[in-house]
Image (cartoon, rainbow, N blue to C red; front, top):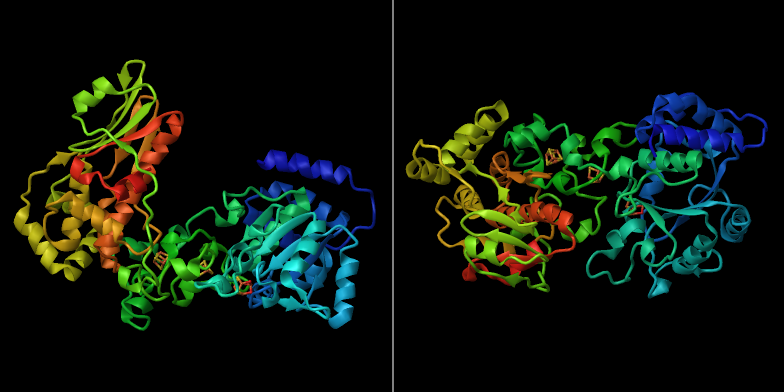
Length: 539
Ligand code: FSX
Ligand code: SF4
Ligand code: F3S
């Protein structure tokens, strides 16, 4: 909903309210929540009026398998503060760690609270198989049983925290209690607010949206509110310029760390994490992990405890908990023909990724062909000179030279000053191979094998610039070579670089493929590269 639609919705809901006594509402708190939600301040008066007139939303907050960090986070909410939250904006009718009642009295409270309409918030994971792993309350009900019975009557369900969204720490390998996120056992839709813990702002403002408009804010494909989880936190980080300049802390107490260096090399997982921590921070906006000097551990991402390796190390194979098993399930057809033969033979229902001496996408469309044309600077020495034309790039190159003298000497000795443009994607991959290894990529298979041997599930982001227009598609790789230098300086190895580059290519190709959903995907690669892993990553 845009601001006009939100306004219309609020006006309608206000008109439906029966006139009653006006409650006290702190305007500054409403303004803060609207700001976080990205809602125009023009709606402030309406929103305040609605909160002051509407009956408060009843909230039942359940605790399952967790550490109560989510509740701790809520306690530190500032606008609204906890007292406002529970007395003025919402009515917190059941919360085991905050309420006075215990034992049978607590159970009576829950029964009473369930007699009215209510919103359910669940903190913590559920053990649906061996349910005895969590028993709660005077009657020793299992968490699973409790969840089911309360969820059945709830008007909407929010999973607050990574435990309740995805299972969390107790679901870490080998997950002896077989715990999981609540959406895996409930048939109802669950709005997820992950984070271990999530910020108070993400909890409170999401609830406020529901209270005002009667529905959840816009969600992503994991049912997370887009306003809070829609962007990569690395892109909002105050240390990002240091990352781009290749300035990394080597240890938590070194001079670079004190001067605000990027924490990637000491394990920051910011580039893999979608959350708004740098913006909203924690403890009433006091700080957030990276500002406090420790890297992000991706605490709001699914399986963060298993998938991102050691907390204080970069994602190189030595620091993975277990090597990922890459299944080769889907094998595409390989038409190993010359480009001109393919152009003649292509069928109406085919879309061909041609990955040989040039990168092409072949689509027959009323006798015309759409080609993916691009070129990049393939003389590595010239490419590095181009990169060093701005301040960050210059610093990055200097740091690369310092960290990789052997590789740099190889580049100096083997490239001249003459620019050479290429559109061969393998040559582009070969440049990163040289940056990592200080030698030429003699066999393309070595690159694919390195990618296949990467022990982590997640690729490091590469910013390939792709534009899909009616007259064709363009892929600009020129700016992305710098990512290889950054990741190398930040402690990644060839394996991570190769996997991430192939993933970035796959992502771009898939973006193009979306426009041709009715066509069959076919590869065209040399027989030596016709390997299951390449099919797998591209398909
Ligand atoms: Fe703890 Fe909440 Fe982590 Fe889990 O936060 S902070 S273990 S997400 O459920 O209490
Ligand atoms: Fe910030 Fe971490 Fe990204 Fe470095 S890697 S810029 S510390 S989020
Ligand atoms: Fe968690 Fe990373 Fe934010 S560790 S709190 S998602 S900075």
